[in-house]
Amino acid sequence: MTWIKLTDLPDQRVPMHIDKAKSFWEVTDGKIVHQTRVNRTADVESFEVLEGSDFIARDKDCVYHAWTTMKTVDRDSFTPLGDGYFRDKDCGYCEFETSLKPLKSGSAEGLKVIGAGYARDAAFAYYCGRPITSCAMPMTLGLVEQTGEHPIPAATTDTQCFYEGALIKGADVATWSMVRNGFSHDAKSVFYNAKKLAGANPDDWTFLKSPYSTSGDKIYFMSFVLKDADRESFEILADGTARDKHSGFSGKNRI
Image (tube, rainbow, N blue to C red; front, side, top):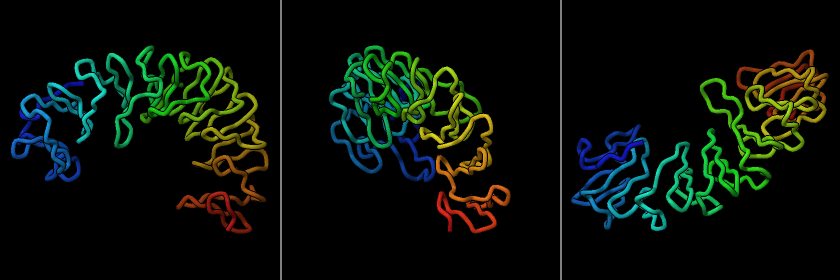
């Protein structure tokens, strides 16, 4: 990524994506402004915005996140790592939603961005900057094989499996694999996100349409069994609800 001087940009501003008449960053009356809020201390002449970011910038002295001065961040060594993660000479950071926060370890030792929201350092594994405290071996964390254009938020260590940062309890790393739309299985069990589908057998489990699936005589909505659902007459409707010969279903509940 590249730092770009705000004063070099057209009209000295970074327009918003939807309403281009409004700005994320701009120079107004000799001051730096972020989303109409004035930063009265930032140095205009040296002020740079991070290419691809609407919130991160720096001047000759400091790093900024929107209108917040990141006083503990070392300006000269602050570096984007990708996937919302950053580091300086002392610490790792993650930008999530409206904040840039230091990682829990408070150190940059061993920091590596894995992808799809995951990272790890010498002390913790992280998902979107949140520590995965259940991860016993963070230095072995690796992303699952990626397919398609959207990142799959699943990762494994030598002994554990994770989906969206949550531990999939009981999953066997040696036989576990992602299937599609949040579903996965190992040799003995089927999972939706990090939840086990009670009674599902991977040998006869079938994906229907997200988030429905079936195994044996059971039909599942996400990880929930649809109580007394009739498999022969079961159908998924265009609006995402479902029905059988008895009545309809809204989510996991019969209606």
